[in-house]
Amino acid sequence: MTIFHRQSKSQDGKVTEQVIDAEVSREFLERIPGGLFRYHADGPQKDEIDFASLDLLHMFGCDTYEEFCELTGNTFLGLVHPDDRDRVEREIAKQIEMGDDDMVVYRLNRRDGEELWVDDRGRLVMDSDGVAWFYVTLVDVTEKMRYQRQMERGNERLEILTALSNDVVFDVECPTGATEVFGDFEGRFGRKPQMSDIVLRRRCQGDCHLDISCFDINPMMQRVSQGSFVECETSILDSEGAPIWFRYQSFVQFDEDGNPVRHVGRLLDTHEMVMRENQFRRKAEHDSLTQLYNREAATTRIEEALNGDSGPCSFFIIDVDDFKHINDQFGHPEGDRVLREIGSFLGRVMRKEDVVARFGGDEFTIFAKGLGPGPAIENILARIAKGPGDGAASDEPCGCVMPTLSIGAITTAGTAKSFDEVYQAADETLYEAKRGGKAQAKLRVID
Image (cartoon, rainbow, N blue to C red; front, side):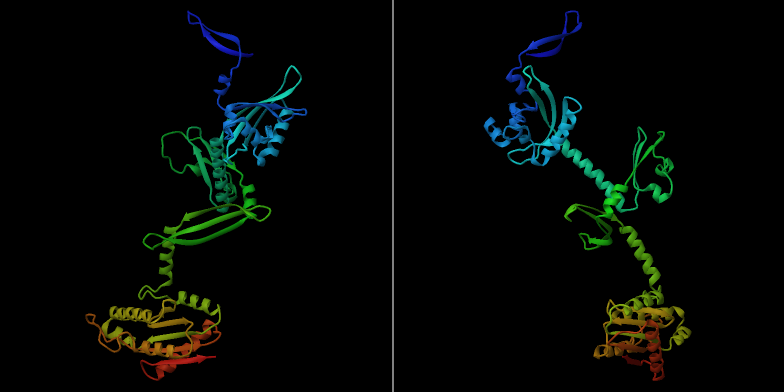
């Protein structure tokens, strides 16, 4: 017999409590959601199940008690997923040392292998014959566990990404003022966070009184230091083939055997910043008149190329013949137009990877890595010496005859010299060309 408590109302509306004895019927038990069972707590039959409800069988995907027994061995540990058994035994034993009740969460050992988590609530009971039983109720908490794991992974993901960067993330609960700060705020700013650091601008009429809690990310920093971290600036082409820039950060965590167990990363939007930097860099590196490299930018690139792998290369210094006469007779605007056209011409003649620059005034330079002695360099020099107009009058209003060019060039098939040595050698060759007349190209081969 089982004792039940229920409320009863009299005719005058007064509520009283009644205690009644009732036989627990099979129909009553089967209508209670969740699995019900009991098993021996000790003795020779320890762990053996004595009673199992129909709902319990259904939790395992079994239609009959025979199928259930075959799957579980009709034992409590047979119910538990093999990967959880050791943990469940330890947790129950520890809790029973403190009292008669235990609570544990684990996965079931289902027939179809589907993951099903249950909340196990058990009670140790000694019957009148001195037999110890565990009476257990199981409730399906699979969705709850999935949601909890998503939350845990989300929190861990936030900690990893915060540890990977120098960012500080905050989360404010406005009604209570409870504020969580993730990241090394104190390490970055040298003090603890204050409300004025988080609420920079009021966007509501409510009072702000923040209760700030900072989360320690040192444990995550240690995990990150033991993993593999990659950071780089890169881009992905959009649907129209244009690059979209972002900063790629990726962290892989490995177990003790060197197997990857977690890969977390993020794509930080840096497109606008990169575009602005490219624009500023271009303005800083290019001549405003001709849009060629300026002297400083060209020198840096040539020095980097000369310090790299050895191989053939060539360097030209180009001087505009009678440029002073153009400025004096036609004016500086016409002189600027001539320089722009020569710069455009040199860019068309040379390859995209060659360094074409305006070194100042009417002096241009070209550095071509991979271009060594031979017919190719001689053909290029002959083409450049004629200039963009080839001696013909310009189509521009009031335009002058496009001037010719004098060129001093050096080329080498082996390891190049320093930039200063290359420039000096080309400059000496230019003077030799000028002594030979206008529109001359002089080439020197350096061993």
